Length: 591
Image (cartoon, rainbow, N blue to C red):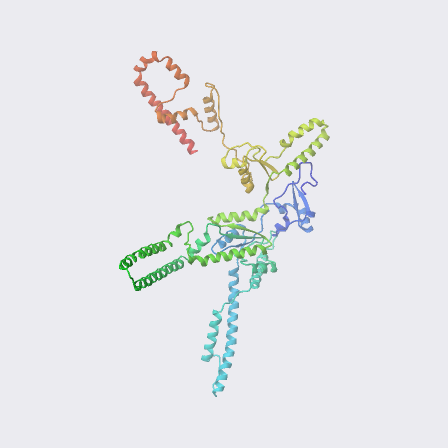
């Protein structure tokens, strides 16, 4: 589709952020894939519509469906996860970000379940009352009594009260169809709340659907979120840590109870063993002495084991887990295993986009950004590694373009062939950083020139990279390394001036640094400062050292006369140079 009806060779239709999704349906709050027969081009990009009606709407006024903030995913999301994984927090933040409605299914079902429970109890009360009245009447007739029996009879009220108490204690499971009915009614009310052209408001389901059966019921009812986000717990054991903190008193109390029971049981076993050993007759005289000494050894071992057992509760809280790894936590571990098993079953039953987000040690803001990245990924430009097919396609486009130019300009075949070889890479559409690595510019703020050996394509432009790792970082999040609204900021100037002695390097460098507002660093002075910190004297240049050796005999007398003055001046100069360099270093560090 990108190559059909192109203006000229090498100028194909570009991909849009909508991809294969219909922009008209997305504006109306639905994500519907487009059909190739309803494909059209606008400006320099092509768009795929979903129906003839959407095609006519787009042709009439395309800007209505393309202006920002579109393409923006319509928020129909479900957030699920194990207990205390942060589902409600992420759901609330996501609803605030998209101005959507937060739907708590348990809160919706609460009044409905209470009403049904009250109806059930009233029905049981009525049936029990009638049965109790008839039963007591039969008893009174058999006893030839003449009293009438009503609902206020003490025995009737006792039977009714007993039946109601049993009904309240009985577990009554909610129906999956009831959840679907209540949720469907509430979502219809949300969609009817706005009837303008901006589309219906979105919604976020908090911890629904939690199992496979409710997934099937939702699909039958026609209520399906566009995306299901599952919050998972990796190797960091964050959920178990939160469960332990929420139930710390209960778990600690159970741990202490278990330790005390084990200690008492161990003492009873040791006492029984000692009694059995004393009752056994001995033929040797030395055996009683061994019996008297040996009990001290089990006591020592017992004390050591008891000490280790008592310490086994506290240190495990500080081994990086954040919770004691003991049998008292098995109940919460089973909850996690049950959720993982349900999620594995749900993945086979889901026919919508779903993904996992590892909570780890991330903050709610970081988790929200990761969720937004998953939701907006279908509406972002894709990047891919420059492959042999891309190079072959580029070569074909260049050949077609050269043939067109050759037909217009009547250039010789030999010259055009040579020009083709040069223009194959010279006419490439490079990215914002040209032949420099965008990852090095963003990470280290330097211009790193690169070849075309490691390259990738993004938004129909080619980027070169300094290493394979840099290319992988770019492919993960290309929008981070390219300009979005303003041009990329060039890095700071780094000028290295070379030249022979006396050519004016220091003078020109100082003047240039003053004009451009840069730091002027002299390598020799910097080196002298480091040497003087240890030797307490400057190192002269080579020619200065030779001249001093040649005239040493003539200058001995003068040096001895002016030794005191020179020492004083040298110390002053050393202090001035050291202070100057220290000030420059401080300025550079602060910059």
